[in-house]
Image 1 (cartoon, helix red, strand yellow):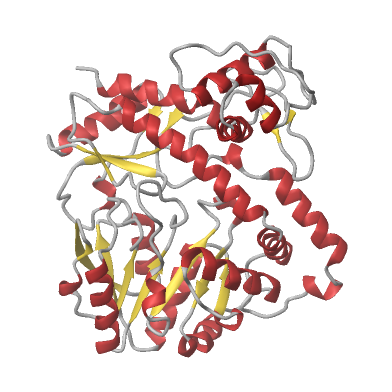
Image 2: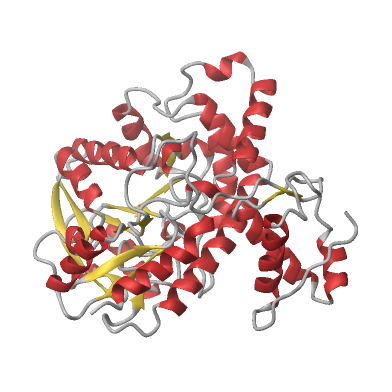
Length: 451
């Protein structure tokens, strides 16, 4: 397609006006599924805008499911996403209408075509031996791909032989807890507050928990007394603080001094918005920091793929705890192909742009609320915290009121080990499907402004 007439609505930014005009062209039938779009260069010249403006608009509409893009082929119109239209062929969905609970990315952004291409490549090229039991550490193809990816993207320098594949971070944490017990470590320092599911994992694995306070610089390292700690240094979960440079050095010094270990949960380190990316804590001392990563936020939690970059002296003890490799070989090989082909990086760039837009809309919409002290923890990740100085009673009230309105909310209360020290709402902007993201924030804003 060489020509496409678009009316750009005044009063909007250029990329927003282009997005709206393209959506309108699809809705009114001028653009139909399968129609090729003008190249970004051609459309930019026709509209008299910078090419980057059109590239941004195309990327957003691709992320929302309006366009379909393949490397080496023109961008084409996909089937228009259903907004809120019930289908006679699909049972009504259960659960809340708008879900702001943290923990999951937008499933509609999963790179299905790229994943399918990766699996096809693997099935064509992988030897039959690749689908055997293999190494308990996981497929060498994935461990090699991760070794390269983590070095360039997160500054984690770890050879493939020291990487272990697990079926997610929680199973990896349980393996580490069992390994620590065999090494004589009986307690684990955990951030206060922290993800409650991880507390359950640690307790069920038989370790004691030492809650350790968090402030604006991250974990209070001066209060560490044991030999092992679990931290979220890039984006503290859930408060969103970044472990300061001085404390990063202090916690590594502590681990060396006590012959201990730091478990680094880098659950969303690829998503930073306000600042330069923060490298992994692991780079300061790979002999004392255990790096943990997962596809849960980057692709989908249902993939059940995670990894540990281990100190050399822990590889054998960890492998001894593993009874067998639980991550399916085909998925491991598929992820390896996704990484080595460059599609993994491309997906992260697309989703980073999509989530940045949502974050900016959330911040702008909730800028002057009658309740709360503003949003914190918004420089990175896929959630923010709306602090509520009014206390726990308001937190509980808002969660309950939201449930009655079909808006799923989660307060800070369950994240505390003991008595809550602060109140607030943990607001994820990643979970609602892309086509409904803006409307969900408007519904949230209306709820929070109620008397």
